[in-house]
Image (cartoon, rainbow, N blue to C red):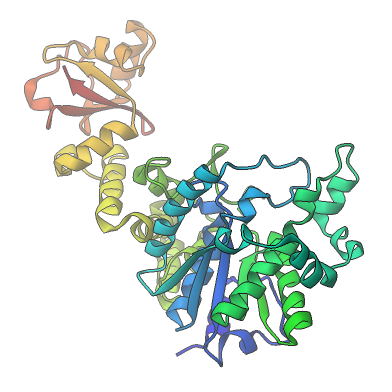
Length: 415
């Protein structure tokens, strides 16, 4: 069996680590690893999914896992390079923390996870003791070298002491977990490296002990050069109420050819051999997009479960001509209706009028041209007769699928 250090390197999870050799952190002693999450939203999004997958790798290798919901640090806010973060109300943070906890447990596959909220200790801190026992180990000179802080200090608005103190609080978290849980590894995104290292230094100075830090890289779409994690400018959430399982599936299905192999390594639990086989199939027939389909199914299953992944997959096949409408179960029909434009119609309606009503044509003349050019299909059957009327047998569970070309789709719904 491959060592965890080898897995993390080969899959692309490692950006920086505090030890000379990665194996010192991952391969010998079973460690207690923590990830801190500030509940600035009530859901994980795919932009920070990679760090949870890194945590999953540690869990699967037998290391103990702690997840900190940053209920305390969210009341302060991690410094941003451009503007002051708005402070979050305590009751809002508590609600978000509960949702994030539930999502994280599902992502980590049911392994035993210690979940804590740093509000439990940060809100009870004695100011004088904190300044004396923690603050003395930090110099302002080093703090202002941090990118986010230095950028804000150079701006006209400056930075508040509230945000300036954030690195001390995150460092204190690591020290607290070290004392209470023997936690000796913190992981996070590369943008958190300075704050993570601050904790390593604090424990070394206060306890004369060695602990470790590991960060994962910023994931970038190789085709566009843009930061990974958004669809048409919108965040893609793991919460099904924010991003439907179908839309979630579509996000992964639309992965670029340049990045899909990397995403399979980072975001799925497939073995290296399985990924190699998938990519070999991709090379033989790139048009089939086998790698993207595998990626979409695997990640959607991981996040939403096999049933929702199957629905999303089947609806996609129906919408894009790989399966017929009658292959959908009743629950998947509901997914279909929510995944494409819909138009209410009735038996006996003229196909020309339906095309216009469904926004697939702008006029009767245009609709007739589309029909003549064999560009229109109903439930996969090409329609050319402009006198055609909708019949009862065209509908399955009260729905029919009308298409113009390959990408213009409308779900017809019986009134």
